[in-house]
Picture 1 (tube, helix red, strand yellow):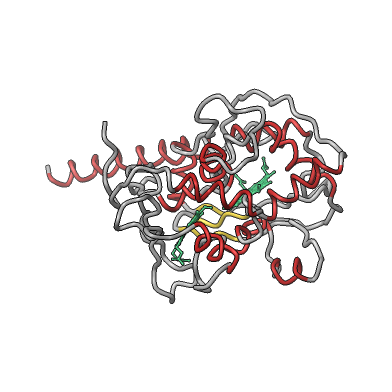
Picture 2: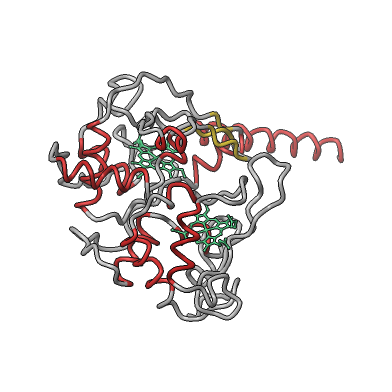
Length: 315
Ligand code: HEC
Ligand code: HEC
């Protein structure tokens, strides 16, 4: 009797496993639909310059799309190629950043402007599959998104074959059931007034620089659970040796790291770049932000309500 039950349990288990494996593999390349933003790259030098400012500054593209020593090259006046292939070794597999130079075969040269715009705004690759949500540029204004694409188009094509992502069994299961395209959180502005207002600072913090991504508490699945910018979850070091670092509270609470910081202190800290060498924060990119933008960021952070780290959102 027991033997029979065990046998049938075994068979049922085997069948379920087969069904799961088949479902997971069938769901690896699900296609999604999303609108194509009506944006066109421009060769206008002011537009390209604005794109360059975002790419090497607030947008910190180089932190993920280059494996070179970007900062020393920029200091020498050389613009490094954003030829990708940076590996993110995650518990569910290895993900590689894309070559975003205009190379036709290994980069984005074969994508149209609208395809690049859709990918960044709606998280849908040109072939319709979902983009892994590493980049939170879903709410970047039309004008700035156009500027970024215009800058990428203005750079020389660099051939660099990026390895395919390698997902393990957990990664494939996550991809099959949980990875979906992420799009804008609301209506996307056409353009932003670039002044030092808290409104522009908020746009930089949430839509372009992604301060929010690290400095807000998340649950285990990555969903935001804390008050915005009131301090994030400790981050393990990439080398696995250095201690974990915690993105501090940036609100106006007395426990905030920014409590008592003047605008001058804030600007000075950002100009210094990375101090803790293994910090995850893209300090060096941010250190290239304009004085105007840093002032806007400061004014926005000073307009936040005081919140304690880890505090739950009030419903
Ligand atoms: C936190 C890391 C990170 C940052 C910052 C980042 N990227 Fe990416 N990017 C990635 C990864 C990883 C992929 C590959 C995603 C995938 O294949 O699903 C990618 C893919 C892309 C793609 C290709 C999308 C497609 O459909 O194939 C473009 C274009 C792109 N990034 C542009 C940018 C630009 C422009 C910036 C800066 C404004 C930027 N990225 C900043 C990690 C990053
Ligand atoms: C990829 C994650 C990440 C992002 C994005 C990020 N931070 Fe941080 N931040 C950290 C971590 C980790 C620390 C603690 C280690 C350190 O000081 O470098 C930190 C520290 C800080 C500090 C304290 C610095 C000091 O010297 O005491 C300030 C201020 C700060 N972040 C502001 C910001 C602002 C503003 C943004 C957006 C423009 C931002 N951060 C984006 C992870 C991040």
